[in-house]
Length: 299
Image (tube, rainbow, N blue to C red; front, side, top):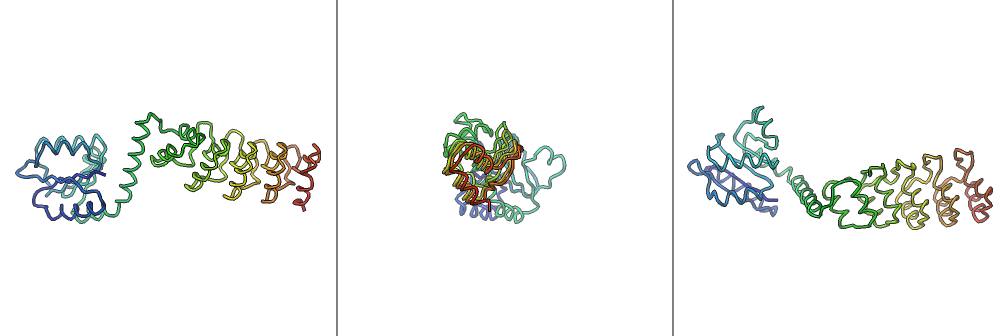
């Protein structure tokens, strides 16, 4: 973060206190004092102003009428840069015209507020930096783009999306959760990454009504199914067409996945809309390898 302090020269002690705090946090500020109704070193002031991320103005309640401060007010407001003002009461017009300006009655109130909110300021700035990196790379900040990089297993770009504020529980335009995207793409690393950051393990897609583990079963991805089970996936969720993960696995004739599912709580007796269970499907289609497995866990 780049902090800028503008203050009347009689507030040197207050400026020093704030300067010490910011320097201790490794965000040493640029400081400009108002002397004889003008700002010190105006040429450099304009340079520093255009690099600022946060600004503090400390005065006795009056604002000197000089071009640099007029320009600074307009620039900071237009760029939506947070500005903290001490010594001037904010009226309703100022609240409407200067929404990014926060006013304090005294310096101690301002310093306490900055100290309390400093972690939030850091997080907000990191978010802006990540946003700009994506913009500079020509990558739109959209859920669909986020999902495409999850499918590609591009952790560097996915991290940028996350740092820029993209939720891990966002859905693409088709209503598909990111965890389902990762499961369908066979991206074990992305599944772990998403769950570590709070992705809902049983999020349901809009298209089929599948959960991530059902998508992994549909793709016959044994290692992904195993991972999602270990992460707490519900194995008895029912899809839009009335099927469970085990019924899907039975239709795909994948005995290792079927056995893994029933051993971890999938119900072989659940009946779909046709009134058929996984066990009954195994018997109907003579899937001999599955019948004894299901019968063991049907008891």
